[in-house]
Image (cartoon, helix red, strand yellow):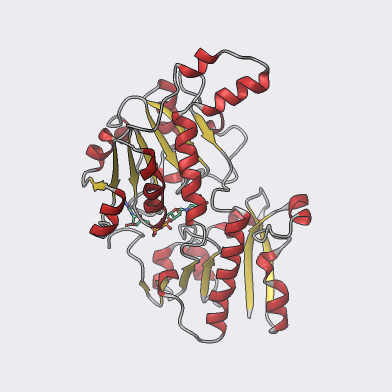
Length: 343
Ligand code: NAI
């Protein structure tokens, strides 16, 4: 069997740090094991401007139709939007991910991003590095999270963990927007209220965090039309997928102050071009940007879990054993998850 792994280039860091498993250098720790079983592992670079990357990073319908031997697509992590899932259904190609492998990693990053925006942390630190000290320039736009309304679009594994982690902050309210209601006991445990209408939902939130998958129903969901309904000066955090938020509309909202800030690690194009507006956009006070490269779900702890999970999916496949139900996005000829839109 031939296994093609599209991983990111780790460079010197991957040579020095073998726990960077998700890199072309360290190959998810799969090479020796697969070789020992007589299989071949081919590794291509993703996450760089490598020529092959744009061709392979997205498994379009066209590519799927050309890949006559393709049987199984695995995301070493969570989020299968890089596969045309409808085409996978049509061609009976299974799509799996290592569900849950990095959801705590992302949820922690979300809480950090909310705090750094609300507390105006980034410009405060930059001021210190510059050698300046003007407390009022920072404090004029610094707030407590206590007493604010925070809402998540998507209350699945990550969204729910964000709500759990926010509970001790004594927010005024925790809200969620999701077509799948939380089990009553889970909602009660965090004190979260479901809001069924998206515009009404965002209009009540001081902070909105995006935690749903990217699919036909969420691409461009946060656009100029929806941003008009946000509270003026709300904060937006997106660690789900860049394309859920409209690049230019979000940038314009930060620039005008309609949003007080935007933070996250996902971009509509990855790697983000040098001149991508999200790298540098600021609110009218020169702050409100908490963007980082896509790493929230790639901590060393997460890499250990998703590398082990990828191996376990391959093992099941090779041994003809059933896959864990929670990992199956597309089974043979049908969606097995309800998270990629209401069908
Ligand atoms: P999950 O499947 O446990 O939860 C997703 C939730 O979103 C479900 O409850 C689903 O009903 C809901 N949803 C789907 N469409 C929606 C819509 N139109 N409006 C509102 N809610 C909707 O998935 P999990 O583990 O929480 O991950 C969510 C996403 O986070 C992934 O699909 C991936 O795109 C992203 N992610 C990002 C990472 C990063 O490194 N930045 C790492 C891991 C995941």
